[in-house]
Length: 220
View 1 (cartoon, helix red, strand yellow):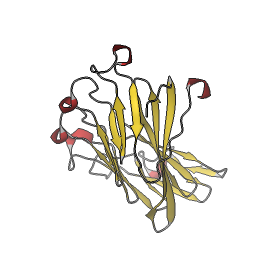
View 2: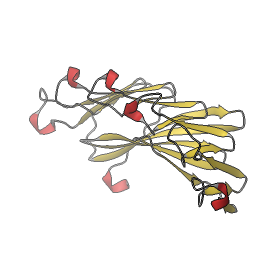
View 3: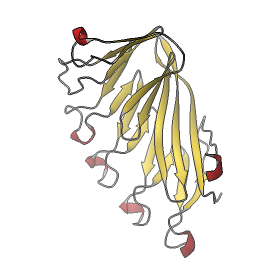
View 4: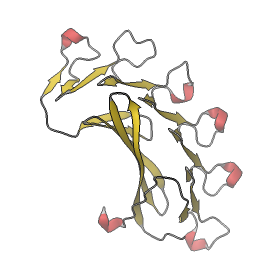
């Protein structure tokens, strides 16, 4: 299947998944795609009424999905929490404090008891500070041991494996997305028509719970 859209967005929907005994979480992998670029824009997880967004660089942010009273930590809670959101409606939020020995002081630690962890120096120096787990959903990233072409890029989200083109595929499309689960992504290379070189060629596969939404640039 050939795709000739100038710009499109893929939304990979992976259905309801338990992240702890207290809450159910849905996570979505959001891909932004053009002829020449396919990037994992963010991974979204719903924890009760809080939306967590994990970026492709492993950073994390949160957003409320409902209206509710907000309370913030004060200086009495320590400098690493001061000014940060403490409660939002019935949601309780906590952060790593100054006693964290893994370098995560000030980062999001729990939402209603759902634990969030990060890679540190005891894991790999390649991905220090990136999100490692949200509840029982794991995030894995490429390291130097996986090859030097795609270090730092998402390698897996839960059971969903992610691959990228590298030098062993030829030099034309190094770094571009190659697969997500069973879904394969191909690109035109030097052996195809010259005017199509480097463009998105096809997306094929039957990854369970994979839903692709295509929009052209006028639908953004």
